[in-house]
Length: 343
Image 1 (tube, rainbow, N blue to C red):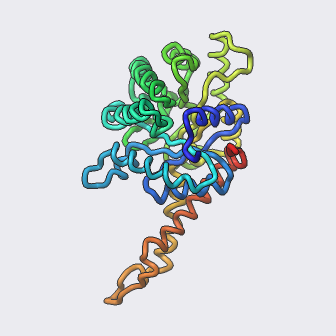
Image 2: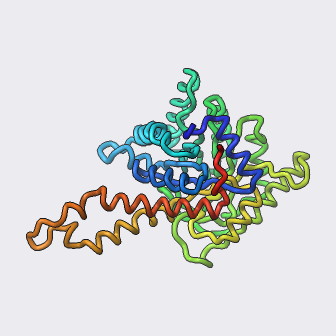
Image 3: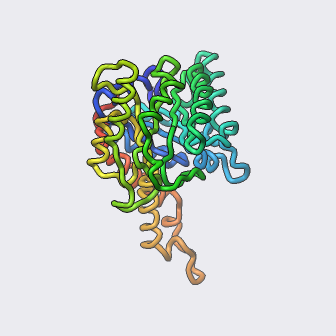
């Protein structure tokens, strides 16, 4: 069962929360990066999450027409086949879909999964993300309510981002300022709209100073302890036991975070951490090294013929896969998911 069923995906998230670990959610843009992520999970003996952003889906759709649904469906179907060869369980997820792309990405994908479920199959993707962080919270939650209802019918988990994550990813950008911190009031309003599971399970990407992309230490002030405040505020409001964690949190903008920041986030209910920038670099770095070392082989310099062995995409592609897999393995260690795979 390499691709999680809805029941197993729920079990994965419950196990992560109880065990205070999180699953690396690895963005992929090709069959090769998919294999790298699966290999990293397998070597770590960790289950995990594979995700495709709108930009990734567009790239997968081919540069002739750049169709996001075609690209994401094709890779998801491919994943359902090749993941059988890896001794871990993974969930398929779509990442960061803003309002102007809902009708050309998430809504059609939910409809595809709903038809599959009606036919007695599992959903194609196990979760989808609605990124309403550019909208007012009221509009964000109104759309989230509609999507959560549809997702529930298709046995899909919805991820919502209620307040901005700084930086830029696939055309969604926010300034780095004080708005990057979710308040207890924001969390309460979310529960008022989406419930606490009775309307369908959702993952919450709350903001605690997170920033997408590359940044140097000191440029971003992360406050993962804020997640404890959000849980406690909602627990008190809704009569939950002291110390309970009502939310399943997602850590966005995790590349470059310190081990201490990650550990604090895990203690406070993070069950999923997105990793894209670091794995992109880990994939590309070995390729660059190969090209520099074999300059006169990968290029036909001064009328020569070069060396087919060095410019063959399989040669440098294997290096890229190994580099990215190693970074996924490292992420599993950082997030304490190593050795936790479902038997």
